[in-house]
Image 1: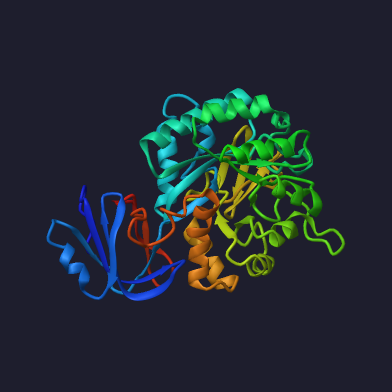
Image 2 (image 1 turned 45 degrees about the vertical axis):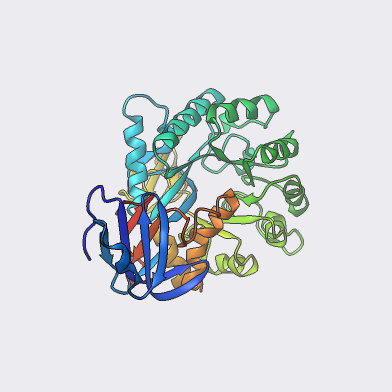
Length: 400
């Protein structure tokens, strides 16, 4: 394959097997002009665009997909997004965390934050807003904390958990300057349903998660405007034959998308398949990755808590060296794609859709992200036969 030319404005990828929400096609070609797709087709029509100093890439039959979108990640490459406002060197750390995921096909990211004091979250949200202004591949922020049920807190510091009062949600939204994409809320908390409605009205995607909610309460949150379930099955009641729980509420409500961490650790692949089949087209694959994604086993931090990563599994670390609750993942999106197709029975098209168009749709940006079509973002991933990343472009620039 011809290597990308630094600074090339026009990129042509031809001879690919296209796979996106609209289907699969052989002999596909696409033209990136700046940050947008300007033309697509099949056969040799691409040659008409090759006379403007274009960077021409022969895919030689490899699979070309839209760029992967991660709605929920905390870091990678040894660095955490929670350090966005930590001071000197924090911006470089965030870029390195993002680079670790971009090398694995994630072209657009929502940066997730764990529970912290409100003032610290304000600083992190403002720092992420600054990053988003400089880098269009950063879609904005996700507050996974602090509005969580203490008994379902997972890897969040219980000292920083609070209920979602209007004053606090207003402060956090203001700090984000229009870049707050998602907020996870346990609907049983005081004021949670009113906060859900207010945030949804303001254009923020509200997710039900880290909750003790039963099916009825989860449905109440969806009726007030929540449209997402944070990492389905994790940090919430499971599916009981007499107590269906929030997962069943999400399956039943066609307005709702369910996040799924498909690393074969957080959710058994057979259980994941039940959700994928029951909520077809409404499952968004996420990483929930912490700093160790794309890095080595060892000791890390997630917010204010210590984490030990052993054999690629991250767990909270106790003072005596014991490990406890799962603390995010070390997953990358290309790995999730491989688990989806090899262990969960998903077709390549369905798995790619869960990584691209479904997350774009829940964010309300599927009119310009998630497809290989003219007018859409010049985001794409080229995969070999083993679904490993050969190349990736974000906003027309070569990322991997």
